[in-house]
Length: 328
Image (spheres, rainbow, N blue to C red):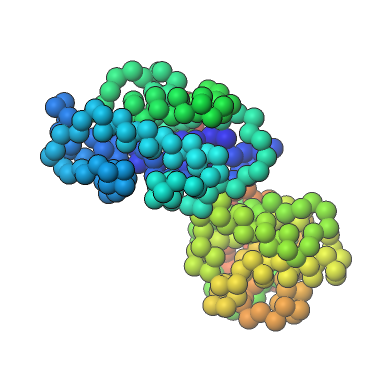
């Protein structure tokens, strides 16, 4: 698990076998409140004001923030962050600060690392105070993490973990076994790639639905509102029964998309795009347009542009846009 604690929020990601398994975000940060050299409040985010009020502290710009109140606020923020890390949401303060649903991951965590500006204080790389909550928040996080017996480790990158990179573009063409509804408008640009972690063997419609729902939650995407393309890796064996279960699972996971008759866009790494699209369109009764392409492998974090069909209208050009990371 990595927890990136910045100025206004903390973002948590759990990684298993090289992929993101769960995420959460909470309004815990070092710059929710800042003062000048005389402890006069010069920056006060709404979240900081609301949290302080919840624990009985009335804050306004221009007033002096006492050391005692600053410590109380930092302790409350750290307590909420530890609850979030543990997948809990029992405190009123945690509920106020949560930006997403609570973290859902039931397996044991091997190691928890911290990154972001506050991590510089957690690992005692930075010792200077910047007239905000960063230093005492880090100290409180360390104390409470130790009390909770969390397996805290140190990453290679902390504040520099924030990505500085450039886009890498590659042009690919889909396989010829695609399913492309006639009502789709091209080009289709900037589709974020969402990769559901589907079971590798015969999967039920319910398990497919859950995999897609979990993936959308990881990306904080609103089904039926945000555009996306679902990319599946070895997701379904090519038999009618399996394809039918898979199609039912996809449709069940996208109720708003189906109700609003928005397009369903899918990509497969094997040559089953046409089979999935045909069965989904014919057997589920949905009226949504379907784009089901295959023989292209996409990764979470990619974005794609899809051009108009070529080669007898069964192949589409796909531009894959990937961020090139620089962890220097």
